[in-house]
Image (cartoon, rainbow, N blue to C red; front, top):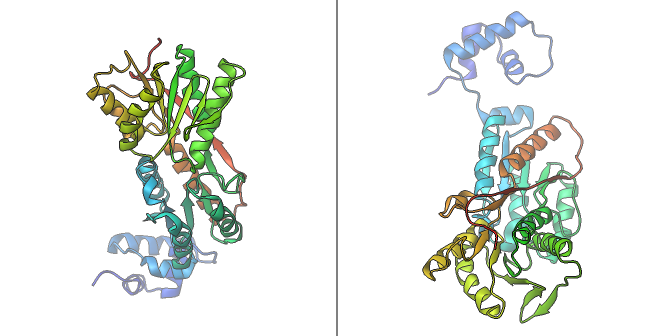
Length: 347
């Protein structure tokens, strides 16, 4: 049996109540000499307080819940790692839940029922039917819920949001500035709000570089002057098949640049290009999104960094501040950065 608080009491000659007050850092009139006596005994005995007992005493669990939809997990893999590191550095444990589709709301509710100091969640893959329920949950929860995307058109308090529109703009501006006239966008899911923001940013870049460009519906894809958009899944398989589709659509106007909605999609593009004997970046420029581990795929992938490490630190810090009595905070946009490696060049 391990060392208990009774052992600390026996060694110091003090009551369990006194020791508990000191260990839980509660306001009291205990002298500094007594505090030091207790702390020395704790170190000597190597006593580790029971987390259950601490939670009952402080009403805090020292746990953060991260809820990520299973189908977008690989997109957020780097974010998960960054949040785990930030929680560890801040003294929090981390519970990760990977629900399927519509089960995300119930996963958040379950985390709140079980007890947590905060929830981090990305609602970008929600359809419109679930936005209202999610907003109601966030606005009425006594436990802070940090959103990593807007809820529909609404920016919620306690949100740390990557500026995906700016990310789309940076990617398209880079290729347009290199002289690419026909660009393909392998977008990911049509319903995902990240994809919608990326497309708005790409439109912004086309409007800046080619005033008067317009988005038109055509054959299930979205086309503009020099832009072809295909929606699909956020994975390498979609990138692999999507490249062939892009090249087929624009046979009369050869695609020379591809914007991928994620680095995973970009990996599929690179693999298929290699099999087809298409040189990257000699014949085809490719830019990814996310600056994930896939950016190491040869040729080194140019991409957009959305700074998952910065988002993680801010999200965990926000939860800690609110639990220390701080107010709800206004949404914060995190600006992305263009990372140039070896997969894009001028035409």
